[in-house]
Length: 359
Image (tube, rainbow, N blue to C red; front, side, top):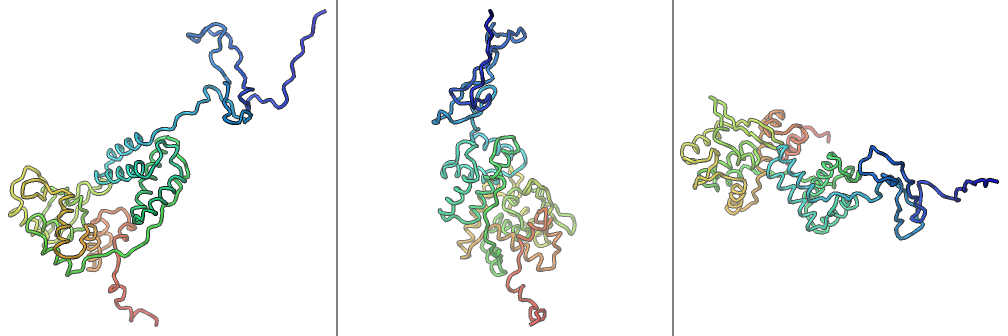
């Protein structure tokens, strides 16, 4: 009499997908396949389920996946930052901007204890960074700058397909107090012009005050960038902020000063830069910075490069200038940015107020 084989019953609570380290199934032996090179007879070509470590709790359920259960290592942040900065250079960002981004990331990763891998860049980590910067009593604009740089890096990593915490991208920037933009009054303008030495220092102050250029744009001017066509003169900004080209008109008075500098002070130089030092070397951004510090010591009040831009924009509108032309002169793509540079002082706010107020 033949014995009848009984089918073993399925253990209570057993699951083919949720297992423990003791219940992980070994894959059944695969059939011999001639299509797979190097496969040994009678050995499986792959294992569908591997023994899974449940950690400290041996009975903790885990999901058994096909293939290796080892988690892929998170990418390191340092090499990603180098790649991101290289892409910014390809996109046409200025060296000053790239240096600013690099300094912020290096300070965060090295001095603020930033994460070594990308999985540590979470919203909680960004909040820890901001709290630490606040405790250090840094300026609100500085703290806002750190946030913008870190979030810009996270956005780039997300676009490149790296795993990024979505909460980081959704974070709102810290608020920056709105302060009144200061300008130089006529007395201060005359004092700065008188304190600048003849030659390139005097012309640099005149161009900053008469065009609203940024210091980097001023230092990059070449002799060929000066155009004088009859009654109209221009200075060409070949690579402004955002790698944008624009022409900046200059007044007849400023044209006269540029011609006088080129004919009497510039002399022969190997470089084609418009502003040249006495030793024939081109004037750089740091050179202009030292000039403004010397002027500050002579005039006795603070001298900031961007304050020239505020002064130009305010005086331009105060004298009846068109806001659309001003936007193009300053090199902005929207009126929102233009309005950030503009303000009306208390004298303008109170002008004709008694005639307009209902009481």
